[in-house]
Image (cartoon, rainbow, N blue to C red):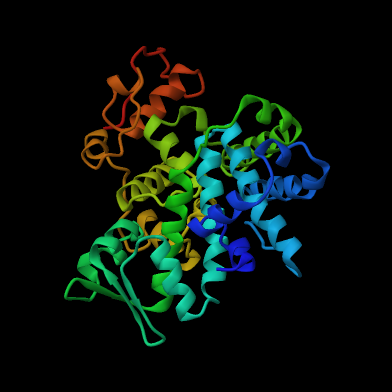
Length: 348
């Protein structure tokens, strides 16, 4: 890849080698006036990652390409200085989403080179794509339609459309970026980036708290059990929840009175968000087909690996809805009985 392609895909190994061969020291990147534009673009990448996504600027010459390429390590260092799981996930996903759009435009030869960079055994042509099932399992999206049993396989090779293969590559990019964060950053560099870091922290807190303000209205987020808080944190940072966790979260929120539109809006940052499909699923759980679903019990949550971080209230209840009611009562927000019963009614 030349510097123009590397600027579009700064996470490939060739980009790392290119940057290492440039004649400058790391501290110069964060102190010299000549790199001010690079630092600004690096901060912009991180801020945009928490918003509508990272858009690629117009690159007209080699200087622009180098600036865009160097902004990537700056962004990674900013994310690493903050070292927050929410930010790492959002940033990794945004970079991967941005790469997806660019990958769609690559010719077959470049796609092959890209797959090789990720050690993916794939056969790519204009007619179709296939990849070895071990690589498919590594990067397949966590969704029922992507399960290996639902794919066509021949002699160990899984057949995919070009768009499906590019979605696989998007996931490979996300995992590579996320697994390599945070990086070790000298304290003096983080100190030099103080103003930019504070701006990012402010935006991060705004984004992180969005789901718990207007969308919940009279609902009490501070009464949610740890399993629900964990699932909400994953959704708000772009994590693709497992089917069981997604069902548990949706049914819980519907059971306590959250509206359908609020739940659909909550999921719109998921990597594979499909509004029509999400609406159908939420309405189905709500009772659109005649059966209203109750959120799973604590034992079911435990069975599916969705019971996360028990607290003292968890030890006394058997259902997430029971947790919600008991926590509300303990905080003085819920209704008590006329005789001020010390043991509030539970949900089992």
